[in-house]
Amino acid sequence: MDLTSITPSPQQMKALTHPVRVRMLGMLRIDGPATATTLAGRLGLNTGATSYHLRQLAQAGFVAEDTALGNARDRWWKAAHQSTTTDTAGPADPESRDTLDAYLQSVVVVMTERLQRSVEELPMLPEEWRDATTYSDWVVTLTPRRARALIEQLMTSMQEIDEEDDDDAAPFVFQLNAYPYPGKVAPEDS
Image (tube, rainbow, N blue to C red; front, side, top):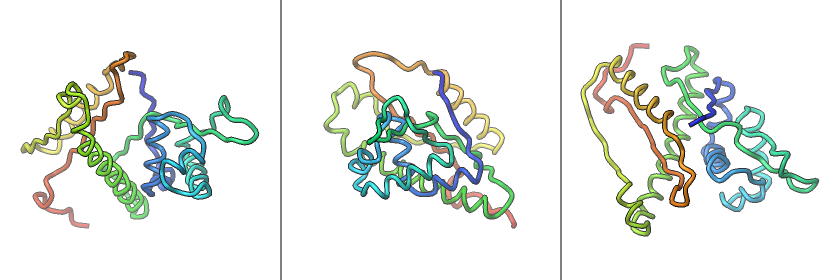
């Protein structure tokens, strides 16, 4: 898979500290180019708010105008990259750390909503797709070094997947959430 990705700077990340922008970027990545009016309808917002959020995403380099689709009346937008990656080790300065934390909160809100919708739609899926779905978790005891190595191994496996161009193929979500069990690691002294 030839996956284009962006690892945003703390300044760019500020554009993704709003869940609406994270949702909007996801829609452009999955559904393809759209106008502010189309996105407003999908998100239940007014066109002015959607245009504002698109401008914020464009200024940060997450979306770009799709000049192949627009005309004098309609401005079409597309995702500039297929994925966003972050370094959660975090920046040293407090403001950038706060931005990272706000971004991660927005991502988790959107991921949780998507996961909830998938559970709600599960009974309506064809048997083959129900059988291909899992909601599993594993809790294993690892050192930070081994945990990082495992994450890198899983990410490498994901990057090696060849997308299928088949009538039965559909976008399939893999969410990798890897973190120390809450409350089990002593906080670092600041």
